[in-house]
Length: 374
Image (cartoon, rainbow, N blue to C red):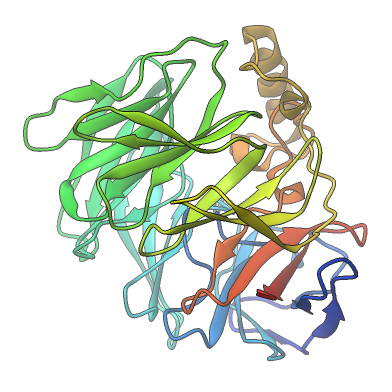
C-alpha cells in the first residue's frame, strides 16, 4: 500500500483554454479528490519549482509534492485527520506547516520528518497562517464547543489560545507587516475583526448585518488595507485606520487573492461563472485568465445573504453522518458552502505569471496551473 514517501508517475497533461488561449498545465489525473492549498496560502514553493497539494488517493487527505510542471508525485504525509486545506509553507519553502485534529505540525520536505509544534486538548483546528517574521502560526480553534484563535511558535517553544469568541471564527490571518495584529472572520455577521495581541483588544472593522453578505476578506498585499467581497455584487477595499471603504469593481468576485504589491487581485467567479479574473485595483478593469468550468458547489452561493441557522444545523448533521473528523471546509455532503474542492480557489505563482486552481470539470477534482495570457 502506498504511503509516506511513496511516488506516483507524472500525471501531467498540457491543455489550452478554448476561450482565452491560455496554456493550462494539468498536474493531477487521478480518480480521487485532488486540490491546491487554500487560496490564502501559496501552493508553489517560493522558488516556483515545486507545487504542494492535497490528494485523497490513498483514502485519506494527505499532502503531496511534485516538481512543476511534469514531475512525479511524492507523498509527504500519511494517516487520518489531516485538515486538507490547512497547509502553509515556510519562507524558504523547505518546511510545511499543517494541522491534524487538535495539533499543529511541521514537516521537513527533504527528510519527511514531522514535529508536533503544539497540541490543544479536545479541539479541532483550522488552516494555518504564517506571520511576517516567520516565527508564529495562527489557526482557528474549536475547543469543547467554543470558538477561538490559537497561536504557536514555529520552533515549538510556545502555544496559546489568544482569543475566546462567542461566534464561529474562520480564516485568521496575520497582518503582512505586523506580527501583533491578526484579522479574522466571524459568523454570523458582522464578519471582519482585528485582534491586537499586545492589548487583547478586538476591533470590528465593519458593522453590517446578514443582509450584507461579506466574504473572503484578506489583506491587500503588503499594505494597510483589507479587501473583501460583498457577494455577489462588489469587490471592495477597507483602510484599517480610517475604516474608509471604497469599491474596486462591481462584479461577482468570489475567492480573492491579491498580488504581493497589492496592485492586482486574482479571483474566481460564480453565478454566473465568467472564469478566473485579474482585477487592476486602481482602475477596477479586469481580464479573464481562463475558464476552470468547475461545478462550484454550495447552495449558499445562489443567494446574496448569509445562510440561516437551519441551513447550518443541517450541514452540521450531514458532517456528523459522514465523518466526525472532517472540518466544515471538506464536508462531502455539505449543500450550504461546499464541497470546497469543487471551488477553483485560485492563487498566484511566485512570479505572478501563473495561476494555480482546482476544477472537477473532468468528473473528479484535479489541480491545474494556467499561464496568464496577457
